[in-house]
Length: 272
Image (cartoon, one colour):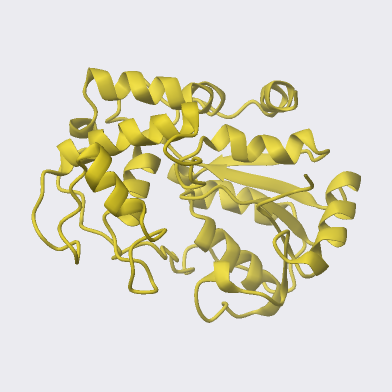
């Protein structure tokens, strides 16, 4: 299995387990800058040099040796499950991707046909009932996660606990798990614990939100998208995310965590 979704700076100063929709583009660019004094020109997910990624075969032995020996500071970042799945919906389902096409080819047409999800027409720019469409998408997301039908769950809406656990199960240990909602504070703690070739000033670093502009803007407050049934589905899919990462399940309108992550608890519960 190894360490899927794991990135490491070329200098091996720090190791990061990517969790989709949790500031991963900005974190990757900060890691790249800390080594090279410049940002990667383009989406950091497309970088195939000057950084180690598990997806690149030549990087795997170095990442594996580092993680198993815990040679470098290791971290990841989490996000409120309510805002994370909403972001996935507007970006991946409603949005036109960088290649000018819909995400995953026939995924959206299948959602329109089988679940009645509206996405704003061919170009994603027409008006549609966002709340109704999102709730139908949520039903689909639950089906993919619970029964792997009509397809395997996508990394952008599969639970954060699942992503984070692979690192632990295969022999890694996190030094820090911080919140997207407290990004500067959390990322600063990481930077304070590592040695970098090029100092990073988080106050001046741009936010690399690569999904921004792909889809329509969210028209309503977060809580308006989640009725009783939607919240029931959220608990079914993301119970561990709410519990382990201290997010407020009872109030979708409260995006802030209720407490710090207990690393020992995370390692104990996700290491099985």
